[in-house]
Image (cartoon, rainbow, N blue to C red; front, side, top):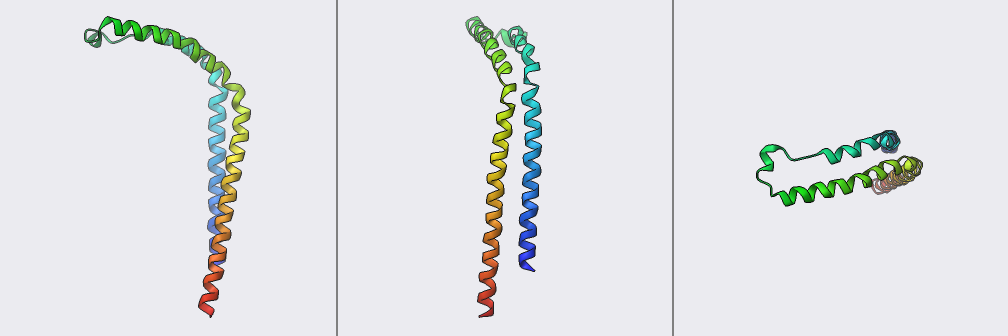
Length: 126
């Protein structure tokens, strides 16, 4: 009975692990695939400015420095958004590899539990 219970728990954990990996993959691929549609959003960075109540407390040199950094950052963000969608295929491979390694670890835990139960039964019979 202990064998069946331990393997039931292990296979239940493998099922939960598989469902979690599948959900992560679905959400990540959706996010990566739609990153290219956000390419126009990077241009909105240049229009950012400090609120009026905060602008009185910040030196103008810092405001100009932050504005120049943001304007230089916009093309980099734009390029990143354009480069991300082709990575969806690699994300699938990475998800399968992580899922496989996790599943192997869970099965090895099941084998370990099986051996512990067998050793425990031998000691109680002796």
